[in-house]
Image (cartoon, rainbow, N blue to C red; front, side, top):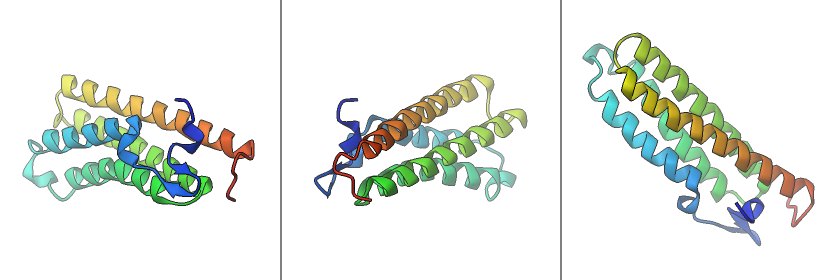
Length: 140
């Protein structure tokens, strides 16, 4: 990821978050979460379904919001929030599978996507933080 320290911030301007591969994977995973949770029991409509959907949307939304901010510090903060939301989705998927709402094969597919998102976010956070620590155009 060359130039990732400036991926969302270039000379104080905003970058399109949709160009980030991590946002693209998070977006597709969010759509899948919505598709899979359609078949959950009606009794979970306002429980687990709402929680898992909100958390998966939060991953995408926090990446986007971080890119819309004007400082690397804010970008990093929102990437951390997205990472936490991804962990929440991961937990809720495990609960869904444990309760029999999500078949093992589907759980494995979504789990792999969440792990990929978390790894990508971790890498992006480190690179943005490292660029900030080097003082290249620091905007603290």
